[in-house]
Image (tube, rainbow, N blue to C red; front, side):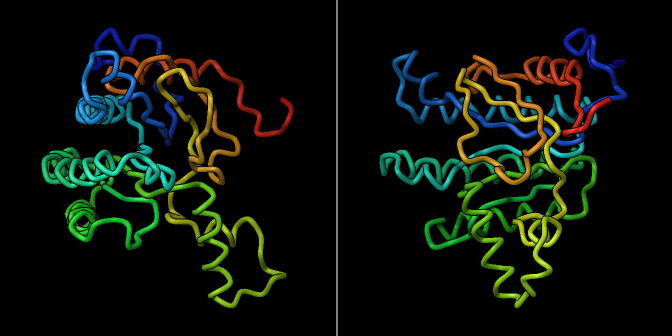
Length: 243
């Protein structure tokens, strides 16, 4: 591809995944390997995220979804959870203008409940409003998110709407997901050498291509994204059919 340097060599611009989702895993192990507190790994992950965002923009990816904080992460030590709440608030303040300048629309997926600090919810709303009209790429941050929780919340929403049971189908359920407009991921990348989905986008990734890498998230950069896209382009996607 022109303008993206040798790191993007071998990528076919005609077959760029429209939606890439990433499980950003390995921050704690990255820090422990260096004798640092786990929180330092989370801080180092910010550079990885925004280099990846820039790489996705260079490729022409239209949707990028990242798993920032799961419904299970509340089980972590209180100090680490408190740090993550403040870190994510600060990251939105530091980066929202940069994302806006790149034409990135910021969205969030997950439960907006009492567990999420009100100040963080305000920062999320500010980023949503600032970038609402952008269309170059949509960056969805899955925060206080769980795939099972999303399906449960969708069913609750359908029941509350008074839907006729005879009309419950996949289309109806999708309309009640956190972001019905979000297309299913074409490619899901998980870092740190773990081979699990970890409750991420359970409904949406039914036919996603999965790529696993040993790279710990703070070390992940756009060239790792490009490698995952090359792997994606080598796959034969049949969606249950036969060529």
